[in-house]
Amino acid sequence: MNTNVLENSLYELIVETSTNLPKDVRRAIRAAKARENAGTRAAMSLATITQNIQMADDNVSPICQDTGLPTFKIKTPVGVNQMEIKKSIHSAMIRATKDGKLRPNSVDSLTGENSGDNLGLGVPVIKFEQWEKDDIEVRLILKGGGCENKNIQYSLPCELDGLGRAGRDLDGIRKCIMHSVYQAQGQGCSAGFIGVGIGGDRSSGYDLAKEQLFRSNDDINPHEDLRKLEEYIVNNANELGIGTMGFGGETTLLGCKIGVMHRIPASFFVSVAYNCWAFRRLGVSLNAETGEIVDWMYQDGEKISFGEEEQQPSQTPEEAPTVVTLQAPISEEDIRKLKVGDVVQINGMMYTGRDAIHKYLSTNDSPVDLNGQVIYHCGPVMLKDEAGNWHVKAAGPTTSIREEPYQGDIMKRFGIRAVIGKGGMGPKTLKALEEHGGVYLNAIGGAAQYYADRIKSVEGVDLMQFGIPEAMWHLKVEGFTAVVTMDAHGNSLHKDVDQSSLEKLSQFKEPVFS
Ligand SMILES: O=C(O)C[C@H](O)C(=O)O
Ligand code: SF4
Image 1: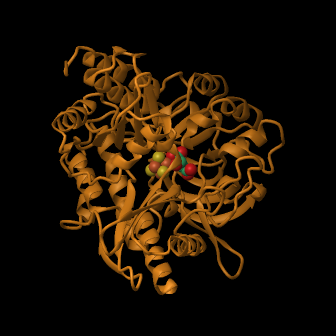
Image 2 (image 1 turned 90 degrees about the horizontal axis):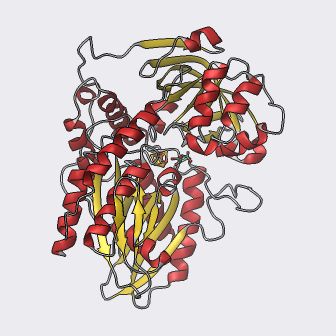
Image 3 (image 1 turned 180 degrees about the vertical axis):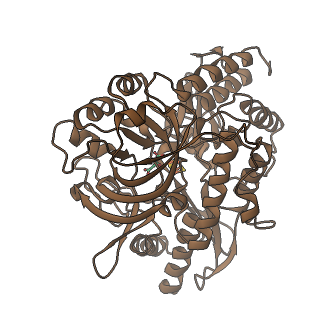
């Protein structure tokens, strides 16, 4: 096999997977958009999502800045050199990272050092299998961290919030899956897709769950009980009212695929792999002699483009939210005027800060004056040009709840007035927002192209020792739009949606499959 051709084919697979959402996923998102009522937060969020999908297509740039943990699943005919394929994957990954199609995402778990090229111990994940066919099949999923963190594994029997006892039967499984959707709230960038593995042990159960994410969203489960369960879950999970980004709404779940395997008598696991709407998985068939791509997977049917006319749903004046323009630095008085539900448009500076920065600021001084400023929970994809200037390639929000232990104290200590992220924060931050005069602003998770477009220049960077995604980038923005979901008056949309969805979950307590 010609290794250059093979490397090019794998490079193409990586770039397409990161930038071009598969057709089955696009169909599900389009259907969800059609279900939302015009003017609601869910409809506006879905309009941003579809606009972002289109921008990623047009710019050939990452749909989401978190290009995830790459997992390759490969089937080869007998006699193909698997070590050669592995080497070509590694060089294709390095190239895709240099070209800004992947974020440098591989971090040493002990030192925190980013390898810079997306390679590392166990990264990327590559799994080989042999088969009888003549072609090589390579499937790739780029699974982001926010949704991965919402995976959950149940050991039956167990007691579940809102649902009571889940026993070792089909109905207990049903309860676990309903609960898994509830517990993800908006933090895995709903509306999501779930893969479920029934049985196995803790590791093979999760493998089976992830295997389901490689099924086409439109396929029909040949196992009749599982087909019924999949249908039940998609229909009823959408009654939970969590909605896009956890803002409330008609669609919470876009797909559910369930697989089953045997278990040993003492164990009964139900493992759920949650994937965000930015469901990046594709596959190719390669000619085993030449390494050329002969076919693409998941690409049946018409390609759905999300054109201009679809972008903004029409709004009646009374439904339209209040839009407030903020110029950073922002005064306490202006912040206290904001209420949950307001839409803000930010102009001026914002500073990125995520996990490493929050930990750092809890015991160190800030490299810049943050008084009145805005912190953006974001780990962007950045590229340096030949003149040494940085450019933003993708820059959506990251899950904020991870900063809950630090956020309130840091806001007070440095005088920060607003934090932007996604998925909301908890009671400690809510209390600090009230005491100090601060707001939490929710941006649309995954909309990395949409937000990159609002960033007009990169004015500087600090704490680069933490690596590109974790450094503190100084960004100048214009018209950066986000929704107030936690205000300085003790209100939190996240708390409200959590409570109302728990009440709705409890309506699914009675047995269905007994
Ligand atoms: O790492 C990121 O940029 C985002 C992450 O995927 C998240 O959802 O929190
Ligand atoms: S930010 Fe959201 S869309 Fe992007 S990888 Fe994380 S969970 Fe997925």
